[in-house]
Amino acid sequence: MNKRFFSVSFALLVSGCLFAVSSAEKGRNTGKIPHAVEVFHPGSKGPIPLDLMQMTGGQGAIEGYFADVDSVICGDGQCEIITVRLVWDAIGQFSRYEFPKGGDLTKKSHKKFTPADHEKLRSILSNPDSALKDVDPKAVVAPGGNPDDPEVDGSSGATLLSDQSAIVPGAVYTCYTLWHWVNGEIPGIIREISASEIKTEQLSEWLRNGSEPQMLFSMKLLAERKTFEKPADEAVVTAAENGSMELASAALDYFRAMAEVKGTETYFSAVERLFAGASGEKRVLILGALTSVELVPPEAFSDWLSAYLSELENYYEVHLMLNLFGAQERCSETVIRNTLPLLERPSFLVGRRAFNFLKDKPLTPDQQAQVNAFGTKYANRL
Image (cartoon, rainbow, N blue to C red; front, side, top):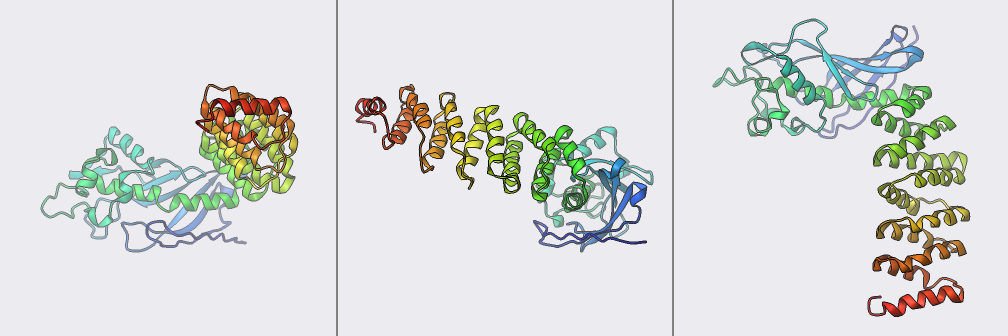
């Protein structure tokens, strides 16, 4: 059987360790594709080999990944260890855990987890910023590892005991072990594999109907691949209009990359649509991007944009827009005409910003008289 090997390496943020990933074609037609990986876990002395299984659905869509791990890392035989199957979605977000060989998690005195314990553990594992992230593994005592208190199951002193939201009492070591499996290197491996193998059709579907993390992943990956299709472009605009600031920022990067393939006008056409439907906060984001992007806008774009000066609600929005116009070689009559009403705004700061922008522009006599009148009125404040 032909085999294709996929390799990925990146530096672990904390340890600096490297891992390598390889995947084989074996199993591709069964809906489960194995990826042999070596993963560093802070509770271990070295890399641990795992089979990371990729789950595929219809048309080869990536549905998620799973790996079977030990509930605790323990080398002295004193721990009660069961196999836990950890499941992630296609971009490395934790989904759930299962017990493929049966059994249940236990805490101190070998008591089984209650439904409330499982609910809390799922919440803990779903939080990539848990206090468990920065706990030194040497500070975590394995079950049975404290001869003075055999009832303690993974005590780590003040750091965790003071943050009860980060642990299931009596199962600290289990929480620590599973959290680092879930939130350590594996999500990054998953993202690298998915980025290499996911199909454009699935990315486009995520843009239309996916979660925000899936939309972000899709925008960034399509931009990296230089793959731009009209349905996806429309979905990016919609996501940016209705989603978070992060989505709007990713959309701007997407259209900036598109300009390299389809030309500058496509970028400014997309920005027009985004700006027209944007809130004040998103307009600041867009204006900042326009100020920093190394693309020359068509003259008609500046004329169109300047019409929004009358709608801008705060000084910073006005400042950014006038900065944008001021960086251009030529200031059009339309831009000047749309800037003049700012001199009459109740906000002195806005009026002064317009005055400083207009004072060296080619003005008609009536326009110059307006600028001079502002300068006379606020002579002591300019």
